[in-house]
Length: 447
Figure 1 (cartoon, rainbow, N blue to C red):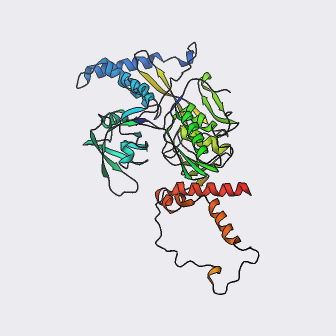
Figure 2 (tube, rainbow, N blue to C red; figure 1 turned 30 degrees about the horizontal axis):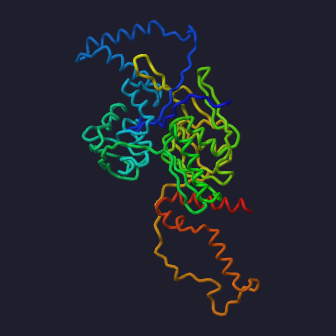
Figure 3 (tube, one colour; figure 1 turned 120 degrees about the vertical axis):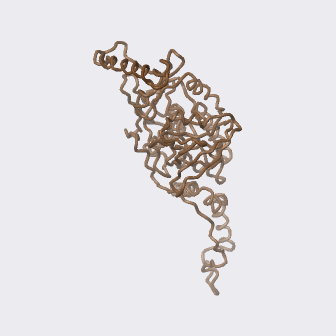
């Protein structure tokens, strides 16, 4: 089925503090005539009105009809799933403004879990990331206010604020025995979703921090630039989707299509008749068949999982890292007449093999735990070989100077691995292992 022109929203798990994912206007399909089976029972409506009147008359403080009805709507949507929500006119306006790519705040994607705010992932190059906030952190206090029992939207409002102002978060982390505090200065956040560089002269690296309207085009530009830097001999690529909370469905399709020549990328199955869709590849492989390794972790969600699932099921890439977040549902933005909107879960999505990753995630082909490595103090002085032994026989088949030439050729073929050795292993062990895997795949393909 050809790709549709409108955009469906795929959020990672909840609310973005300070940086909102770029959204398209989703289309929500409804039937032309109401079925009698779908009619709201009259008795339930009477009960609702009775409760509304009793609260209005008997609550300890006076409450406006508008507040009561808005709270009722929020409660109805909050009770459906963690991702459906009522967006006030102000919240809906923020989502629409978010397509500009510049925002104010902290730069974290959060959800509510057991009464606390759970960090899904910090966004690259934002105050939260620079302050050391990590995926999986539990925020239990915002300044002097305890989070327990608070609604997610209320917690988000506390964390938002004017750029340049400070906020102190009290954080629980699995690796720490005690809670600790992190002070973060709010800032205007400019998000660049695609970054790229060469790991060695022949192996490239692309980092996608979220999926926005510009991600597909930015990825194509990055791939062209990497090919130029490698003089057309790009032997492999690491695609880094770690801590990527998701974004637009169309952007995930574009990224997958950049590495696939044919086949299904993702399918969507909803209860409403017109919600079912399928997206297929057809633009060609920007990497020209070279090996591809995709890095994921527990902060990779939604659109990231679509890309990882498509590349894994098609056999195009090896997925490396940790099991992903497991958000396999689609949210559609439905504008309302009062300038507010609904963010409504309307469908589940499935990988090309028909897998639903909802609450399961993508299991990597090669699992890597989060570890820190450091350089060994061992020196090279103790190393010796057969050639170092007294009276060692010469290589009988090698012509004069042949061994030196062969060793030099081998060194050149190794791409001058300074960046992929000790320094890279210390800075990012998972990336170091991904690069080693790429080299092995390249050698195997030559044989």
